[in-house]
Amino acid sequence: MQVASHIILSKEIIERKLQRMAYEIYERNEQASKLILAGIADRGTVVARKIESLLKQVAPFEVIFTEIQIDKAHPLTSSWQPRVPFENEVVIVVDDVANTGRTLFYAMKPFMEAIPATLQTLVLIDRQHKIYPVHIDYTGYSLATTLQEQIFVKTEGEEILYAYIS
Image 1 (cartoon, rainbow, N blue to C red):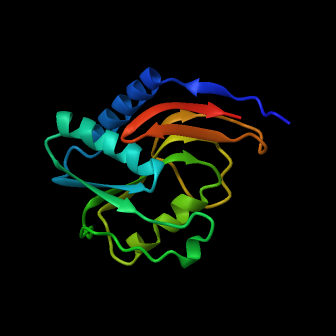
Image 2 (spheres, one colour):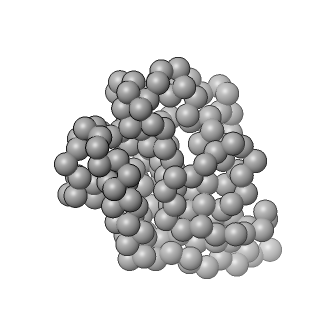
């Protein structure tokens, strides 16, 4: 059976949403001297790199990128450690799509072993089906879907091409 899918965000719309989120981050954290963007591999890192580039154009504070490696199917077996010190720093955990909040929840575990100044979250698309205690601070697009529908973000290298639902 063929599953129908359609584009919900074009590249141009995604770029505008990323720009808006970068300004929101700057406004909320303008007193910071440093900000750490922790992108969840794979597509979350692409989103984080885009935000990093945009923030470096508008914000006076230092922006540092780090990648979170987590096995999304078995998050308890993932034991990654941040590559940059984050104690007393502003940390934003970034992913492409928030479904149940599970991946974001487990990705934050190492950050709880030390004390960042703030721990924030950013997703390009929030599906609003949280079953984990995760609050999304920066959302590009919020979308109510059925549990059967899936949201995908299509990337190619460091580019975000579009997002679609199927």
